[in-house]
Image 1 (spheres, rainbow, N blue to C red):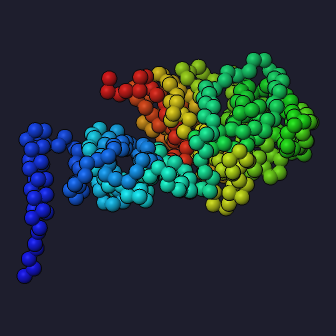
Image 2 (cartoon, rainbow, N blue to C red):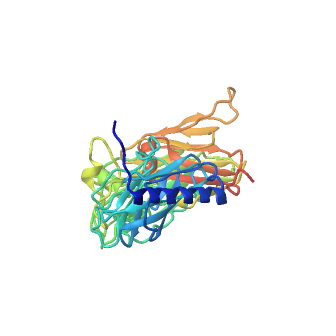
Length: 455
């Protein structure tokens, strides 16, 4: 028989802990419903500071924590998500909170710091990871941040720049159709730095200084005369290809050198949502680096009036070094693995700035997948599309069988017109239902009414 022996000091220590626990239960009662703290071994020393971690669906804020020195720290964990989450440190300390609850605990942080995860199955893999480091410790190789619902983006050798300028919000509202039947449009090429995601700047090539380029909206029968201008200070030759046109490739689509101009004239013979892009070799590099845009051609009689109209272009970023063009080698891989998949050029911009709509109001979306390589399964969570025109194939509202659509599949260079309305106030996520890309930036929100379904 094995007999466990305890020193007098150990017995006293455990007795003191028991008395403290009993005293705490008498004064505060049971822990809050849904908040469970798995206690670590008793600590003799008092916490020297507090760290705060927030869990949401699905991620942690912050993902990187720094403390002044090693030692015992109080942990305040808040779960703002809709499902249970925990924060589990690499030493085994675990704090669990149900949705909307918080819990306190302690953790001892050593000289090498600690990592933390959510141990609920699948949550770590979906991006719920983080790290605590000690001030002055050598910096780790920077990784992508993954702070949203679709899972973490891949690792990259491009480090985020905390000093990168904020991104410029790209307006989502679709423009009105141009007046008249002949349209002269100046389109000036601009090579420029652009923040494409928080902390990441690329030297993009653009039509008109934005990615995507300006939306051109006309009607069937109109004539469009695009005056393409490549400034003398540009570094590259460029061109333009309108999928909405019927012209010879070796005529209007030829490249122009820096300092040159070209007239590209075409007639809008067919309605739809069309892509335009630079076709200069390698076209993959020029499209991947930002040279694409949308053309909307309405029927000759126009489209019926609706309450809201928005234009959304899905595309990909294959990050190159900070301040340089995108990485052509990455973009050329046979199995595309973009660092970011985005709507209107910037990762998560409509998650940060939700698009406001009226509840029960009719919403029309013009959607284009500019690629260059990844398919889109365009979906708005919580809605049903009751009118879709995809590449000339039409689903009408109030059709005989009362059919609807849940997602619109778009290969690169395909477009669609989509209509829906929301049933109640709330938030309605905009995603590609290829969910491995949602965590890489392909996530936005429609804010219907005040955004709160419970009021």
